[in-house]
Image (cartoon, rainbow, N blue to C red; front, side, top):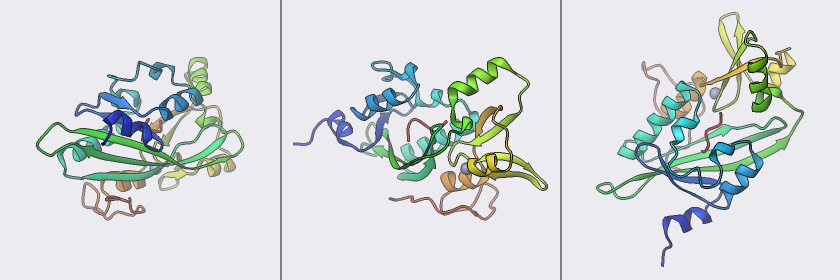
Length: 226
Ligand SMILES: [Zn+2]
C-alpha cells in the first residue's frame, strides 16, 4: 500500500533527500532534483553522482557545516525530533526564501536516516547582485587575491559590515544601498541571530544569553544555501 522511500521522496514538494547517520546521501526525490540541477551550477552533484556523496562536504564554510552537523545529530538521536527554519537562498537576480525541514525517519531502536526537505516559499526577481553569483566570485578570487572579504550569513544572507560597535549584518539590499563593493570575495558563515534561531530555538545561546532572534518553527534544506 505504501510505496518505497523513493516513491515517497518523489512525491514530496521541494528538494528532498535522505541521508544516513554520517551524512551520506541515500536517495533524492525526483524530479525536483533534476530540475534543481538544471537551474543551478552544481555539475559535481549531477545525475548518478549524488548518491553516496556526503552532504556536509558540499558546505564550504566550517561554521555552517558545524551547525548542520549539530542539527543532524540532534535529529538522529531524538533530542530534537524535528527542526524547521526559514532561510534565504538568493540567485544573483532572484530573492528566494526557503523553508528547511529536517527530521528523523525510522524507528528509535532501528536504523535511522535523516530526511531533508527544502521548499520554496517565495521567489521575487530583482536587480542583479554579484554577492550571489558564484561564477563571478570564483572568477574574482582567481583574478585578485587581495580583494576584501565579505562574510555572508548562509541562513539569512545578510552581509557582515564593519560598524562602530563591531559588526553589523546588513540585508544585501542595504549593503549595496550603503555603498558596499561588488568586487569582493565572499566567505560564508552564520550571523548570531541565525545561530540562535537555528541551533537553540526556544532556548538560550551557548552561554545562556537570551535569544533575540525570531523563533524557529520547531515541532512543525539542500543543498545548504551556500
Ligand atoms: Zn543570518
